[in-house]
Image (cartoon, rainbow, N blue to C red):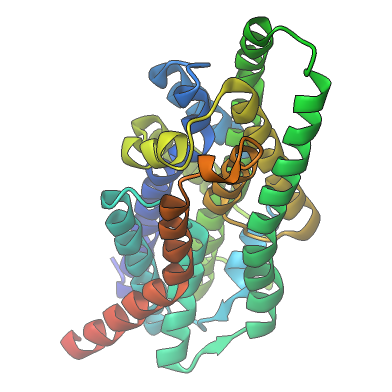
Length: 334
């Protein structure tokens, strides 16, 4: 096998490993609230999330195009593939580290941060205007939108059911959570599976196996990314599920449904409307905090929420350092 082809195969394999870790790291995004409110059993919730992640991966390609051709110009050849490989390994490393600590961080920002870090040490062209408009701004806006919209919608829900019997009302919301959890999982597949598609096509272009200025996603890339992230989701991320479902605030079915519904809306608007790779983790975490704040501000465990925010802020620079360090280490060994 030619060296460049061998590198392409390795990069594609590591990209799918990233996809798998993304699935089990972010499985909690879709199912934590439904499990914590007992709307769904853990196994049913994870199976539903896996199926919807699979379907969601085929709903668009805008985010894939942003990741694959909008963040960094790596060029072509073996060195370009080493750059992509270092970024992927750095992103996977950060995901595993935060998963072990039970912190719901963003796979999107880990991957983009690692690509930017590698771009800085190699002096490759990083499209900072795209990073600003489609990564940094959405990174700030999406959690704020999740919090504020979830807070306001929850106030509306509470007003609408103010004269309803609590028991039957909560049972109806528990049933409705099946739909909202499915919508959340579709949004996760729409967002996160596309990131893997984008980086695989970037590797194919760098290796000379996908050219002509055409950034269309080959069918086998779509299927591979969709199946692998779905498998990762089915494995589940129980450590992070505990953080999202119970440690930030104890959720009831009405608040769980509202948080999932609002998060889904933010994900769809970002992916389909702006082709922006927003964080499903940030969106659902902020929505959970927003619905929780309608009880009383003290009901939210702000210490846990603060730790989650710190992890969000640290993710891009930490992944950038990991990606850059791995590339430099590989250069020394080679």
